[in-house]
Image (cartoon, rainbow over all chains, first blue to last red; front, side):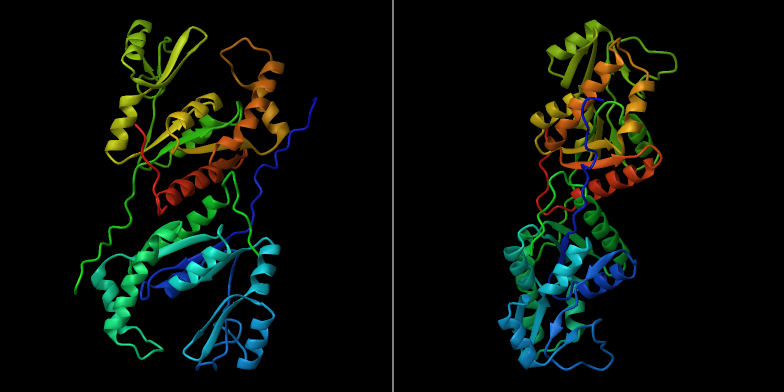
Length: 207
Length: 207
C-alpha cells in the first residue's frame, strides 16, 4: 500500500439543538418525552432567581439562585442568554453547555421564540427546531387552559402566540406537535439530530 | 378570530435521494436492504442496452432495450444521465423520475461517484449521500473479491476507488457502511430522508 487512507471521515461533533415554538405548542411535553427516551443528550437546566415552587427540584426543574448571585454571574458573562421576566431572572448557564459539548454530548435547549432568536444570533450553527401545532382549535384550547405566570389576558396571549408563528423562517426544521401524537414529534427530532451528525460539513460548535 | 392562520406549514415535498460511494463500499447491498424495509420510496431502475444476464428481471434489475431504441431515447433527451460503458449504454430515465416525484414519492437513485457528480450538477438540490467503508482492510477485501465486468487489474480498481473517496466533499451526508452493520447504515439513510422532509426551506424539486 503506497499511501494511508484516512477512514476517519465521520467525526460526530456535538450539536447544540434548540427546541422552540409558539406558546402553547407543547414544548415542555416534547422535551419531557425526549428525556424519557434515555438517549445521551444533555438537557440544559435554566437558572432562575425566583423561589422554587412546590415540587420543583434543584438541578432538575431549574438551578435556583439568589438575585444577588445571579447578578454577579451576569457580570461574569456566565449566561449565554438571560432575561428579567416579571422581576425574576432566568438565564442559560454558559459553563453547563460548554462542559457538555466538550465531553462530546449533544445539548438540548428548550427556549421560547425570543430566546431562539438570540441563540441563532449567538450560535449561527445551532440546530433550530420549531414546533408547530397541528391545528388551530387544539392550539387555542391549550392557550386558554394553560397555567400562566402572568396576568395578561387571553386575547394578548393569543396575539403574542400568533406573532411567534411568524418566526418560523429563522429556524432550520419544523416539526408538527399533534397533541395525541407526541411520539411522532420526538421520533422526528431524533431523526433530525441523527441526520445532522452525518453532514459532510459539520456545523461549527459555538461557545 | 380576526385572522385565519395557516397551519399548512409542513409541506412534505418529494426528494431525489442519491446513494453513492466508492467501488466496493456496498451500494447495492445498502439499497437492497433499504428496499426490504418496504417504505414508500421509488427506486429508480436504470435502462441498459446490454442483454440480460441469467436471472435478471426486466423492470427490477434493469429496463432492457435495444441499442437502437436507446439511441433514439438519447436523441429525445429522455435520460437524466447516460453513459456508454464498455459498448453498452446505461441511462437514468427522466420520465420514470418525473412520474414518481409528481405523485409525491421520494426517488432513490444508486449511482457511482461519477454519476453523482453529474446529478449534483443537474439537480443541485438533490440529497447526496456518500457511503464510506468502515475500515480499509475490509474494503480492499471487497474490491479484491467482487465480480467485475471489466478486465481492469486489481491495482487499477483500487486506485480508482481511492480517487473516488476524494469526491466526498461534494456530498451532503456521509454514512459508514460496515459490512456487519448494514441496518445501521439503512437506519441513518431513513433518518436523513425524514429530517430532510422537515426542513423549513424545502429543497427545490428538479426535473
